[in-house]
Image (cartoon, rainbow, N blue to C red; front, side, top):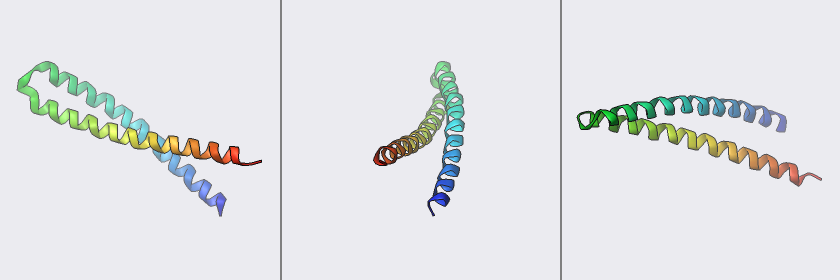
Length: 84
């Protein structure tokens, strides 16, 4: 039973790593566009606001995936230290 769980958790880890990488790429792109629209001035304030919302969306995905990484890391470390 535990082998099946380990396999599923491995698949979930691979998916979370893919989400992390994609979120970083989108964060860089959205941060660039936010800076671009901010530099253009107040006539592009709606586009700037939209780009900032996209940046916050990317940060939310990064935060979720990093939380998963830290949970898995500390859980695995705890289980390894618990074994005799």
